[in-house]
Image (cartoon, rainbow, N blue to C red; front, side, top):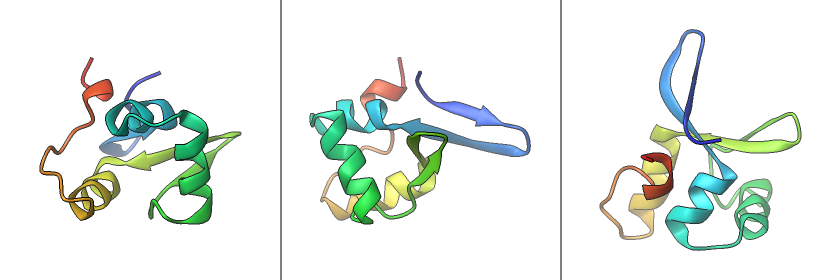
Length: 75
């Protein structure tokens, strides 16, 4: 699915698969972390989880990394 933009929203939105690819984790693990609140700022769209780029950047920096965009989302 990749990053998306919505009406009135110019910030990219990443899917569970985008984040899983960047962290090299299984998508179920990422979804579990989003559901538990460990990955703050994640929200549900239908049955799937999403996260805005700004919230992802904060979480990713908290892990000690400096890259600002998941590799999976740039393809």
